[in-house]
Image 1 (tube, one colour):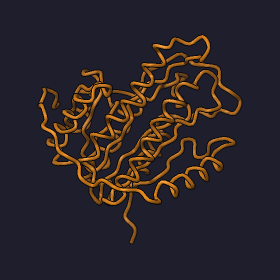
Image 2: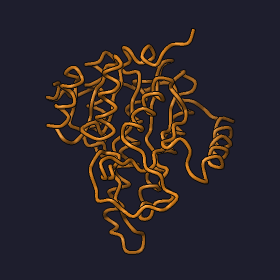
Image 3: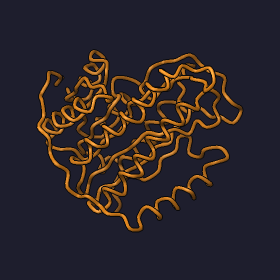
Image 4: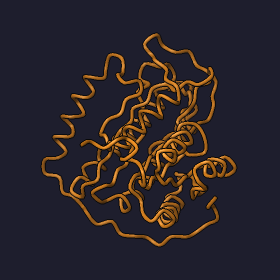
Length: 278
């Protein structure tokens, strides 16, 4: 008999980055309702504490994912509080509406530091905690290719996606899985919500672009985590490019598997406990 969604989530120990607001906070609350044990990372202590309180006084930490040492210490702290980790959601990110020709290079640099390096630090720290048969990492990527002025976001989230693809092959011999969630524009109450939950001004949308509510996104992510799925799309099909990209990803996965040497040992690092348990 197949297990229900709730049965697949109850007791699961799940760490979520960017959990102060938006998708991160919504997902944390939903997983808690399903019986999961959540640990929260983010940049807004007051909002983190509010979310943590709703989630049964879940442990939380202030953490800038650009800081490798802060990420490692926070992971060790939350893993200790939760008694280990079963899943990690790399949700933290930024979505700057930046042009190429006239855009500010410093904004581009910041987007790379958060969306690419921040994801790298998150997945690197996650590896030694979720490298077991029930382990799972979920990387939030992007499907905003048809939205004007979001090329920088798509490019940096594309980098995050490739990191997730690489981690999938590294963890495969250990039985752990890695999922990639490709999210389009997430819309709520006429406000475009970034991946870190920060509200930004509404931008002109292409006729091909589709928007989804935070509830729809959380529903899809919840199902993906429960089933440890490899692919999650919100909306369910990306206009025009979904099937082609899926074929390319499958071909890439097959190529990577050939001759791959896995490194199954992750060295534990000391942790520095900081205030933050709600």
